[in-house]
Image 1 (cartoon, each protein chain N blue to C red):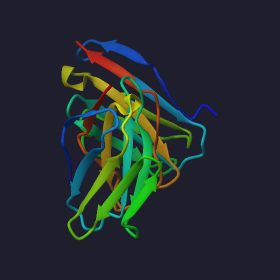
Image 2: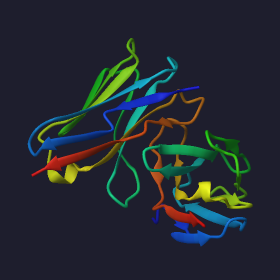
Image 3: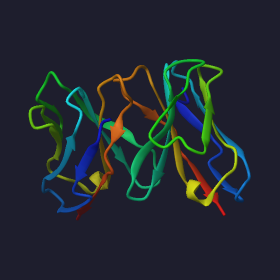
Image 4: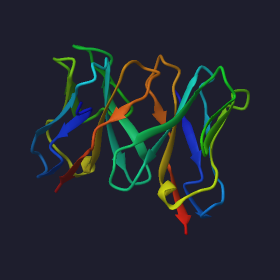
Length: 111
Length: 112
């Protein structure tokens, strides 16, 4: 089955700097790659997703890139702000099987 | 719309006791899921359902049972709770498999 690995497990950045979180997946049939953000004590919420027919997607300060050949995808946050502090989860699915989540990255933005 | 709701929010059980967690969604979603979240382990799928009357095992199904008698509800049962089941449980729903999952607020369960 699918295996998703996420790095780093913790990340600290200065406010205004960029943050990058990387994930690799094992199932070449996977074609849907969402990212969820979970603030402390809250539920996970989708922030951006990408499907295998595109290589990059942007939404304001957030972007996701996908390299299907290498089977990895990354989340990029630019101009980080304190409210970006949270745990971020990547996930992958082929549609025939449920989403498999990475173990999460705790991002701390230091003011 | 309430979205996805979970009952109860907190619960403390003694080893061997049983309980049922209720998840309800009002978005007419076909798919529903139960996850557990433990520190450093991410979100692990317990069971899921692809439609009313269906259930399937996820990554960590042992010790849990589920039922989906109505499209809007997905129940998670623990027949004989164990300390290893201490966790935060999240329910989620989605329109279909490759669509956004909407999560409930979570249930914090402690088994002593």
